[in-house]
Image (cartoon, rainbow over all chains, first blue to last red):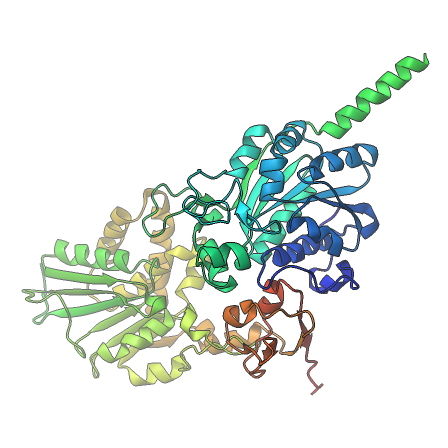
Length: 281
Length: 297
């Protein structure tokens, strides 16, 4: 994997299944921007389409794998990481990228996420966080902000929300990052670092759900939502500032954590090879 | 305390934040004070590159009554940046004023409003020769270049102090002592050399322009950005009319048509920045920039 490809020659249509386009996402959905950033990062790394496997779960984010012209799996709800774990152990030569949503990765698949982080297998997990279950009708998700209205919290959400990056860091993920969709180039570079990292890498993409979440909470159209998301973040350059006089920072963006631990796949293969040799004697 | 000037001497120091305007005025004020003058100094430092002012007034004499210099009463104008010098030049005394400027250019953001590729920044067009002709005495020097040759471009303000010292009648040792006491201890040596170099350069004549300064306005063409032919293709079948490209375009050249599909309304304004294509969630916009090959001369 090298980072020397001609970055200007990127054509998104080369990576998309043209017969599936236009995609099914609502107007202004941030997932489309995340999809572009993902395939752009893969292009920049010079990854061959035949050596790429994209695994996704259920939900709006789950449908993205259908549009990428590579080896793709559309799996069960919350379990893309388990499919990806088996795939990567069986075919270590493939680059395995998991596209998951906030409900997919944190609620139904929360257990699988923490164990994937703990195991540190060389998978890249892209969690598209739009703070809601969009496809199933706008129910509250683990990342819905406090006070927001959804179809299951008609009087406002009273639960505190999840910091997914803190969870992944604590569970031992090798690489943890977060970015907003507004910063396409930064998001692309973050995904590029995540895919290049040897070990489990977790990237939280703060996407926007305009049609359901934005409409229900009166957050404006997608441009307003994207700009609001961007200005609510604390960028990398202001990482070490203690006081925040001019803006209420909620979450940090950029690379959140790097944890250089032994990659699980190599250790697993070494052990199975040793057992096989021992059994033959 | 010999030979005090009869009237108040006015020195105005201008520049951009971080260049050392305050340090220059501090050295000058301390020197005058040590020499027995009455000194008043007042300063404003507020984002020169955003349109604000970074300047420092130093007035000294037997008795100074007011800390600010009236327009047209400045004896010596020291500019740490070329355009800032031009901005304050009308404050100079028309007949006897001395203009000392660094030819360093710091192009402010509002000079780059034309974002077309290959566009020239709207920086001050005056040449050093034109300016030198207008003033009684003038020095346009490449202080930053001289300081960089000595090892640290930050010492450019001390180079200008060296030039200033030739206009004022204080002994060189007194200047050097004050500078050594003001600058950080590890940079005392380089500042001493910068001062000596600036002083030696300014002693070469009353109206001097550095060779680098006369090439000042060729700097733009050295950085060659090829002009490009921009083509914006919008796939109407894929566009869902989310309005992102229309709202995010820095030049406001896109719009939604009657069918709520994005279209390029003002192609002349488009700079080919590609932001719309990056932010389009529907992959409907494609921007291609083809460099225009210039005809051979």
